[in-house]
Amino acid sequence: MNPRPIRTRLRVAATIALLPVLALTACGSGDTSGTAPAAAQASPAPADDPVAAVRKVDSAAALLPVGVREAGTLRVGSSVGFPPGAYYPNGQDKPPAGQDIDLADAVAKVLGVKLERQDASFETILPALGSGKYDFGTGNFGVTTERLKTIDFVTYINDGQGFAVKTGNTTFGKKVTDLTQLCGLTIGTGAGTTFEATLTAQKGVCAKAGKKPYDVKVYSENGATLTALQQGRIDVIMSTINGLRYQAAQPASQTTFLGEFHRLDVGFAFKKGSPLTKAFQAAVNELIKDGTYARILKKWGTSASAIDTSRINPPEHT
Image (cartoon, rainbow, N blue to C red):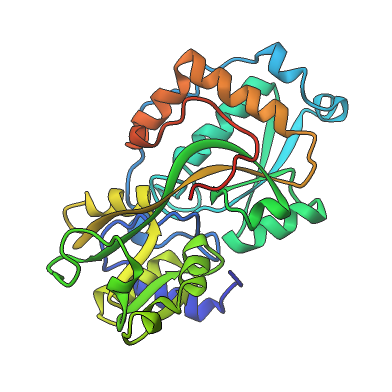
């Protein structure tokens, strides 16, 4: 997501301020400028703090490279967009909150390091890992066959792809199970996401079915996608299961979740061949074992997406 001119960002923010709390963290997408829309900023974070009790685990920390242990810090590129993944609950003058934030902070405590968090637009993070700008990235990154060619992943949750419509839209019934249900419609999704890749790769399904093709509109900001839905410029949103489910649970959101379409493992992202993956895997598994992991997911309402054990570079779900 390329930064937008200031006037454009302000115009989008002003529009979104009229909308309810959003929840389109993606496999993913985040806010382009690092400034979450006013509606998202107004959403309070849960008060409990399961990360506070986490302590260093020497066996996991020993898996870090010596240089990292001596420096005591790791640089993380963080895509901050909307709950439950990562967002600004009280404006950008306060630290970000969310499931991804808590899990990254908990892993860092297990490993005995501090995080230097830098907000970044979603689609810039993975390329920046290869250049060494960040040690790892967070942003609800789905593990796909294509991404595994250049990125290493350490999984921490199972999320995936889903759809949502404006409440009252009965075009799809209760669920989208096949992309041919979208033929002739306009779909909104995030730039650089697995959703955009899936829709692009499968665009020929409508022609094969003898139907009018669907149109895809890509947005650099999650809030802009919801604005387009509310204004009737798109018919349906494709985004993350947990984000869309969270959004639809907000009474004022006026959106309806249309179910799961394709599950994906989600993980911390690293450059290919990173020496950090085994330490992160061990840290996530420590959090699972001691119950911290379950408490974090319960806090953010994502317990249904829990994993039993963290894996390095699992194959994409088919």
